[in-house]
Image (tube, rainbow, N blue to C red; front, side, top):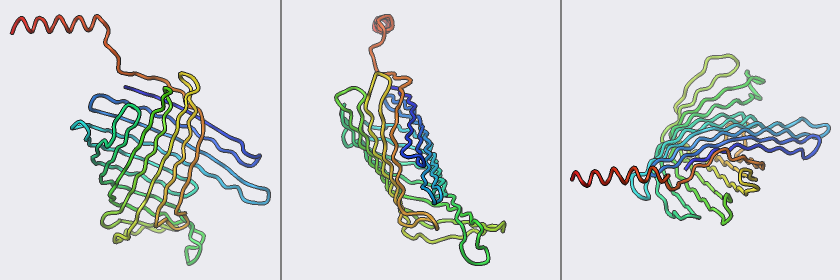
Length: 274
């Protein structure tokens, strides 16, 4: 089964408030292997007379490979990248792990997984005091994390209606390596002991078909960090609404009669030889 989708949306809430988003995804699922790729970009600006404009610009892309070893158990590997201009953070992480299907029916699927992730964050923060006041400090942090994930997917009776929810918890394991540079000075690298750094990512999406190819899609994504970087917030929320176009859809089907007859002839010849 194969799916490709692209979508875009935009809204002008007030003369000073604009929001745009665009994205795409491609998935392939075979009997034992699943491959998925995604990418999205969101831009927003908001302001009011007499106040500075606030601009948000986020981008995310990644891919994942699943391989089923038993009926309900699988191993996986994934790589993800996220950039957040408002928070001045860019993050890349790679995860390997295993999981199993708790529920797997035609309309409802529940999956649990766990794994180890290797991540690296880059952040820029403005120094407000001291000899380097007014300069930006660039921090780069590398770390290992334990990942625990949950995924829920529900298909409606109407073809194409989908509601999905994903929850992923990250907990730092061991020490983190942090390097910093500011004011054009050479960077310094430190080994910082594990300090209870945790992150919780949540995503809820819905898709409602309007036609055979066109669907309305909405998403709400949240991220909570207990130890944010200087100048960043603990919580991050992104809400999007737009239209998606389904480019391709290959579903399982019966092979053509000519192929079936050819396989039957080969099987008959093998049986005669035996």
